[in-house]
Length: 284
Ligand code: GUN
Image (cartoon, rainbow, N blue to C red; front, side, top):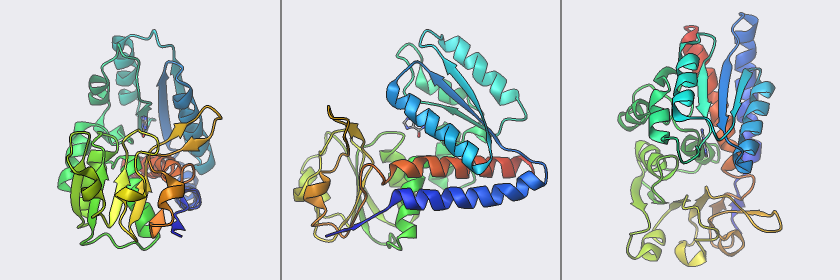
């Protein structure tokens, strides 16, 4: 039976570390502020946004909420982002994705100032991540690396297979694993022999958005399995892209859903907000 990677516990430890560092900045009179923009009423997005605001409160940042109807136009959103970019009291800007279909996500992400891009989605942030210079790392993939490190799981020299190539998870997770000296294979819906490739992975990272897509036939004995998927069934039960019950007896470590990668996204967001504040006040 695999050791279950407790993302909830690690995320709480990280938030406590951020809170402790932030207290010192608060004593010096510096208060971090995150602007959170939500367009429309997607129920999952509303929950994520609520949790992000709650985390801000916990660590001692101010969160400014901009909850807009789905009728908001692209121009109106771009105008709002411009205002937030120019507000010197704001350290981070987060526009919750997905946006309604009439709004071009790429255009919106491009409008966010890279110095406030605490999601790490701007092309400048992505470029900095690829070459390894200063920027903001995307929260979910950075959270995966943090989980592996805090469980003392060696990455250097390991075979890592990433299933999925989204801009938010698959591509950046592959780059960050490469930066840690893993040998990385990115797979996707056109990949041939997926089962064979996955079965060769020491570390398997799955973000495909398909419930229980990966079962034990895809997993090498003793592999580390990281599940980024999240699905809610008709009984409101959450599950991931990995068939946890089937895979847990074959893997050496596995992340559960819920309580694995999910809470790490918010913890890493808090870390990015702290970094942005520290940069603004000249503490890094
Ligand atoms: N939608 C799903 N994940 C994320 C995330 O990490 N940040 C934002 N802004 N939107 C998301």
